[in-house]
Image (cartoon, rainbow, N blue to C red; front, side, top):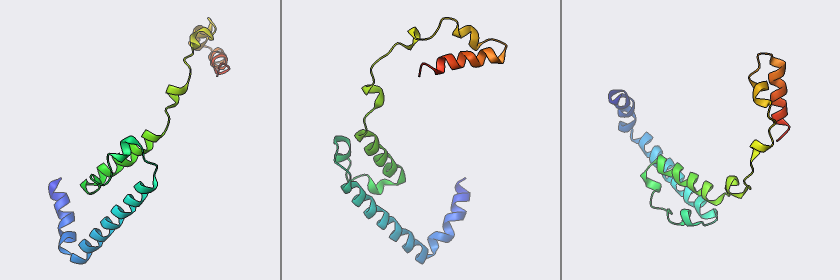
Length: 116
């Protein structure tokens, strides 16, 4: 695989105009990301990561934006009240769900569907 990548990169790396364009677009992307990061509300996880990991590569860039997006959002599983749904399900539903007759299986599914 190394030879295949080298065969692809050698013609590009020797062409200075292409390398200048690549560098220009990389700098523009870095500036755009910094502006985006400044426009986002500050959170504890996001404020620690400003600026340092930007030039490290594309992976750190996507990890930072993903972390910023998930850290500011509330987790619905933490907000919801615990509820025992086992008590709501009828006792004969399991038999209906494994029945050979498809109509009985549909009826079992519908009885569970009504609960939600």
